[in-house]
Image (cartoon, rainbow, N blue to C red; front, side, top):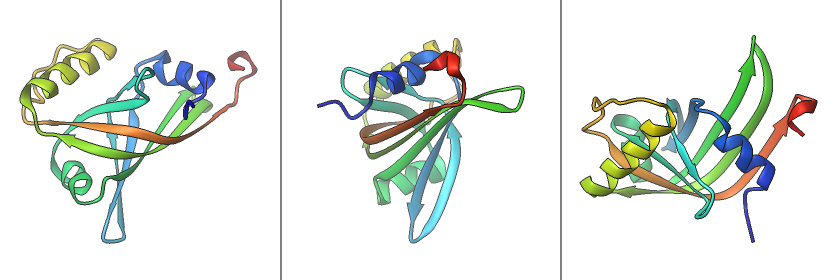
Length: 135
């Protein structure tokens, strides 16, 4: 049974928007922007990250991800995901994920060589549209 509705999947895959990853360690939340790629076949989100986000995920794998599309300061839609993150300490898998993510954002960076792959298994998903054209 699918956790993510077809409508939410369409929104997640629709355009290269910034997501906000929420982590929490010792009762202190931390939210930071990330690029992401959603894989509808496996219902996972891939990100590559480093620093505090990565350290928090290693300590507490329960995360949230929020994506919203705005137009001229007005929300058109939003998707919120809750899931469990797994850190993948494999350079080849991280490189492959980085290429997939960069392709989504039409970017050719190699600036994130020190980042590590994090896969988020989606446990629940909610979405809302604010534009009748998106229904």
